[in-house]
Length: 149
Image (cartoon, rainbow, N blue to C red; front, side):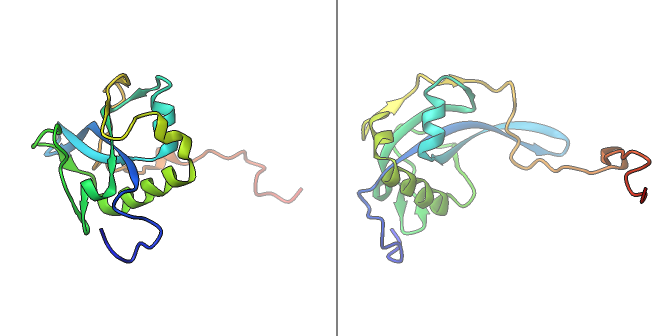
């Protein structure tokens, strides 16, 4: 782990998830699996049964998933899975959420995997989606909006 992070140690608790995401290439959408950190508030929502792109969540330590700024694939995760963008920064931020909210650590004991979430790809998470703004997106204003009455 990077030494500039004085409030965290390699033994700090973190949860990482395996999410089903999608990327758009050449007009087609392809499914991929992404490993990404899960902050404590998001984990608490996931275990309440909201539909999610996560297949599983694994409780581990920062030292087990980061070697400096380089992510380490945990055992049990597919070799084809990709790490999320800015994984190291997001992992450090997520680990801090568990330091503030110690009770969240009891949801998934260290070293165990949680798979009881409501996995769904109905609302696809497209990672490289671009939003094209058109004139139709403009809000129509009432004719008196800019008049001084």
